[in-house]
Amino acid sequence: MDRIDRVNSLIKDTVAFILTRRMKDPRLGLITIHDVVVSRDLQNAKIYFGVTNLSEKDETEVLLNAASSFIRKELGKEITLRHIPKLQFIYDNSYEKGDRIFRLLRKIKKDETE
Image 1 (spheres, one colour):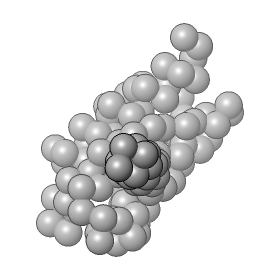
Image 2: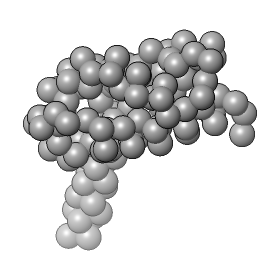
Image 3: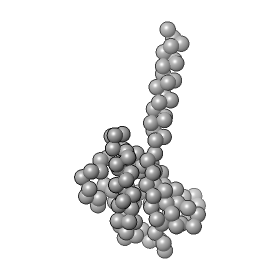
Image 4: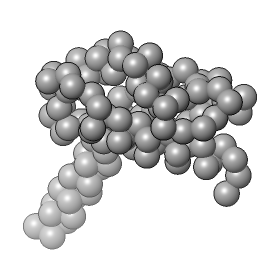
């Protein structure tokens, strides 16, 4: 595991902790951090997240990006890096795509057996 992978994992775990323990915004529902991709120069981090209520995905993305400076400051308190990357939150729809594919495959299988 190289350094970037370790930093990705550390930021993922720490941001998840910050969102569950330190964010007090009642508009945020249940959020899952799926992945973190930090640039090679450690200046930027893309944080991919999912929500349980799909109708809240756009609002959640706006809220998280608006709170990114707060989250970045809290991240700096928790981890020791020379430079804390700028955070960008991006909604991850891969679970929706996977669920759609699974439903289509089930439908095909059902149609074949009939």
